[in-house]
Image 1: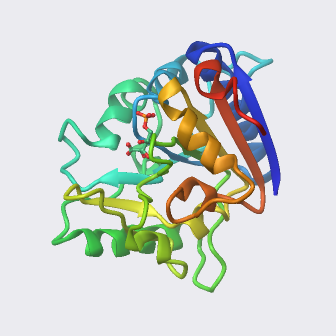
Image 2: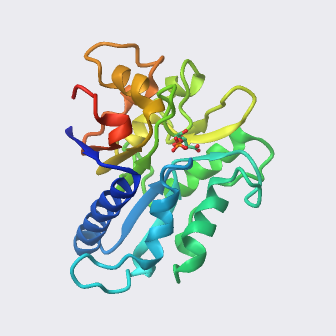
Length: 247
Ligand SMILES: O=C(O)[C@H](O)[C@@H](O)[C@H](O)[C@H](O)COP(=O)(O)O
């Protein structure tokens, strides 16, 4: 694992750095494999990043991005209809996807109208396997997985001391936060990505970050500790969250 921690002066610098990093990964992916696959996070931190995507162009060529080669997934989703105010898909469409000519087939939302969350998780897993043409034991490899971190050190919908943290043989599982039902990538699937990028902002994240970066702490109490990808791990922090961090 190749881990990089960057502390940016404020949230707008954090977003600008995240955009720069994503565009760099996007260009490499399209050059090497003809497409770019990214799984998005919900929450408030990434929203300005999504809002910046419609006007993003290649860093040097300032071209329109090749939206037909870009595929968007979600690393977790609330188990609500896609028009529900809590939907991560709805937030992302309003902030970004409704403003670019990305083909509808390139948007891969989590199904949330199934009989129950377990059925939805299984259906999303099947879709991922078919998209990445992976039927074997190997987990599919996304180019980028964007993550946030809660002040309880959860990430995606992998919450402390939940059953989702024990699921190692699936891509997608149910991750409940108290009575709020969610669908989430499992941590081993997240760890299969080429690059995992955490975006963390705000002083309220300081205690959780200290535990996540501590040499020893309980992974099930601080689930973001479980994110140890074979590829690149990026922590992009604003100064409020990261200025005191011992990395
Ligand atoms: O669906 C979600 O809400 C996210 O996947 C969740 O894991 C989020 O990233 C963290 O709760 C941090 O949220 P903020 O960015 O709002 O602090």
